Amino acid sequence: MSEKDESAIVIKGLWFSYDGYCVLEDVNLSIPQGDFVSVVGPNGGGKTTLLRLVLGLLRPSRGEIRVFGVTPEEARPRTGYMPQHAQLDPQFPATVMDVALMGRLGQGRPFGPYSKRDKEAVVTALEQVGLRDLHKKSFASISGGQRQRLFIARALAGEPDLLLLDEPTANLDVVMEGDLYELLQTLNQRMTVVMVSHDLGFVSKLVKSVVCVKCQVSSHPTSEITGEIIDAMYGSPMRIVRHDHGDSKEVIKWRSSS
Amino acid sequence: MAQFLIDLQQYQFLQNALFTGILASVACGIIGTYIVIRRISYIADGIAHTVLGGMGAALYLHKVYHWQGVVPLHGALVAAVIAAVVIGLVSLWAKQREDTVISALWAVGMAAGIVFISRTPGYNEDLMGYLFGNILMVSSSDLWMLAGLDIVIVAVGLLFYNQFLAVCFDQEFARVRGVRVEVFYLLLLCLAALTVVVLATVVGIVMVIALLTLPVAVAALFSTTMWRMMIISSILCAIFTTSGLMLSYGPDYPAGAATIIIAGAIYLAATTLKWALSRGRS
Image (cartoon, rainbow over all chains, first blue to last red; front, side, top):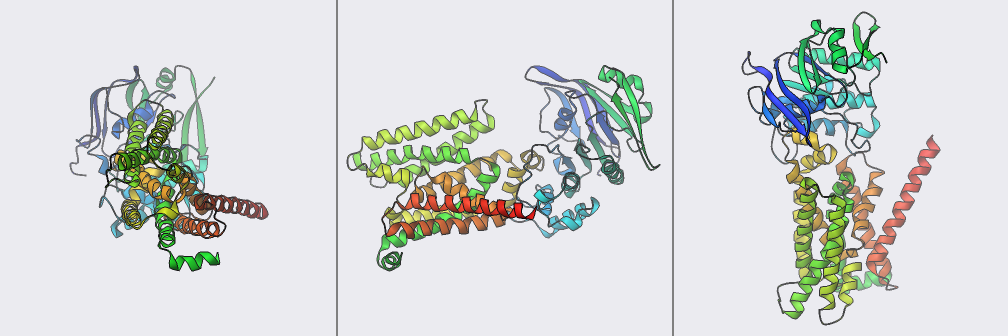
């Protein structure tokens, strides 16, 4: 947190095309520090591409991205990332601790074992997601929801100022989803949170702004999100479904009415 | 078997063979584990077969042009590292189909080796030795070189344990954490190439892949962490090579083939046992 008024992410005039297809068109976006952003949009709309650009895993065809005022690569030590994990080997020989420690790479020495400081940071991260007691368990033996939390801990292990999550609610049931949002809300008190959602995602009390991605990108405060914006983005009428789970976990979702 | 133990005290070549097997096992356990969990055994096999070209070329230079300093082991090293770098670069950056390139290198490497060996005067027993192993022919100078290689493989393999683990598990995340993924991938392939050369002296290039993967496959049934997998597969590999040597010595079977059959039998037994146990439990 070097400068208080510095934006977490600034994107100016960004274009990205892949194999000749334009995926993102003239994106201008500014995400202030401390924001909690949900990135929504239809499949293939470019949500994950946008996230990967912010991580420096892809390079824009045109335009500029700044993360904390520097290039995405330079900002990586301050960035925590939770990717989609459909493709990982579930039988991989590693413990929960081993996986979480991967989040410490790039912080200390470029070779050799992890330091005591690394291990302390990881234990703290595991504690935050409630996996402290499972740290010796094998990766193969934990459940899908626990894996999801483990990947958040791995992202937190590097003590980031910006947390980027790609579909963190995939594979989670509604109760686990609610727990996850609570965790993210707590984390948001210390860091900027940007998450990609698989369907329109939730627009609940905790998300402060919504970024809609469908080739073009528009940003809205949560309060301004209306049915018209959603319909325009998905190109078909959507229905608002209200999920109420007691009074504390209120999640609103839009689903296609067709 | 008793004859083996008596002769072991007498003959240098048997001692060399025993040490070669044990040295190879350390590299085999560590690098074999990386190869299996990163799922690049096809690449390792491709590198192994390409090695024949280098061996043949070195043998040819040695016998026809009397390059005294050049022995087949040198040729094997050069060919293995070149194959590793070419395959690595292709799989990282080129749009070429990776398996096509591996198959091409594999076959062309072997073809070059066969041509060189056929043009080399003398017995063609060498070819059989390279293909199926010649552990009883390891000279003392070879043994020192294998020991040196072993130290390099083990040291690099362990020094970057965390980086390799992360790259094998989730390459993209490792990249975001600032790990130079391409460098480590190429380094891993080069270590695999060196390991292939060491193992080729034990079981021959055709059977290298079995010794790289079978001990790890057995170890995987009983390990939840990578380091445990490495230790168990190293021990298993040492058991396989030593027992292969011992059991083949009396009846004069080919040692490399005996080693592989033992490894295969243990793998089959271990998977069956594991399957039976899990069935019994559920």
